[in-house]
Length: 364
Image 1 (cartoon, rainbow, N blue to C red):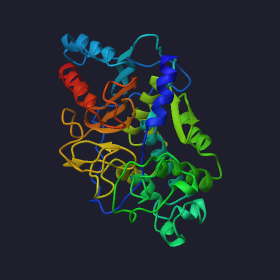
Image 2 (cartoon, rainbow, N blue to C red; image 1 turned 90 degrees about the vertical axis):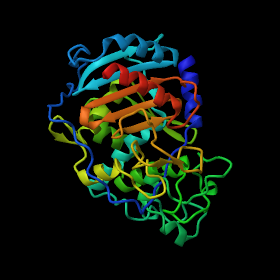
Image 3 (tube, rainbow, N blue to C red; image 1 turned 135 degrees about the horizontal axis):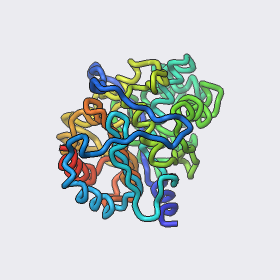
Image 4 (cartoon, helix red, strand yellow; image 1 turned 60 degrees about the vertical axis):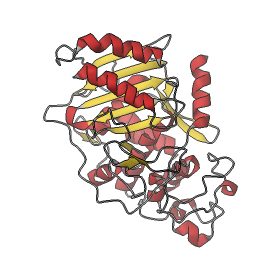
């Protein structure tokens, strides 16, 4: 019951994204290092492992990492190297079969789903979202609506008013004009959630079923989208998040099969997407940039998102410290699901830095 209560409360506190323009030309996404990736079999619990000692990791630091994760309310924790499991830990009464909400880390799933729908010709992120939602989906004028593109929803720059009483509400009455699209970044959940309607209307298939068909079922994930209030949250076991991380590590390909065929979209998704928040792509967080904006705040903060983490880190981050980390040059995927680690942040928090201090000591 503790986990269910915290998951429901976590869903209420998440905030999310829109979109923007004007960023620098994206750099090619980091590619996995020159070693063959292993992909676990679909429909099987078998998953190859490799020991920390085989990787020459500092096993003396393992207990410290495990104790830290336990103290911080972690439920499930996985490290993949070259697709193989190095670490798989569960804490308390949480098991490998238990499902946990990804919270806003699930936005990474939405970002890839949008990319697949575009690659299949159902939509274009450069077109107005009005084309897929119909005129009058907000309280804006028809002209103001027409200026908001799908890309703006993807990059948190729709210009919709995030100061409304309920920033999760995507009812027409809650969607008001505040800024010109593309000129201001703010983590506005309602503007993000509307992408679900865009996908549904563009494809003619409910966005849940579309994402199951195009991603979940093709890579052997478990899990489902669950509607809680205004939020659509993805719940799965820990290994399923690791499978999705492995898919993203390999730039949308799974064991020789292309899930996301548009590699340009993948590159754009995992690079700075607009000029107002360098540390944000298409619903993914990016480390190694000169500044960032955090959820719930208007100020631009100087410095890297997670200073202790590798600069190339790409992350899906969710409320109450749900973490999906990718380190492409080292073929690493790291998953952390659990309770709030104590910071109460919606996205990046000091927990990220503390965790990476422990990880660096362990994997060095």
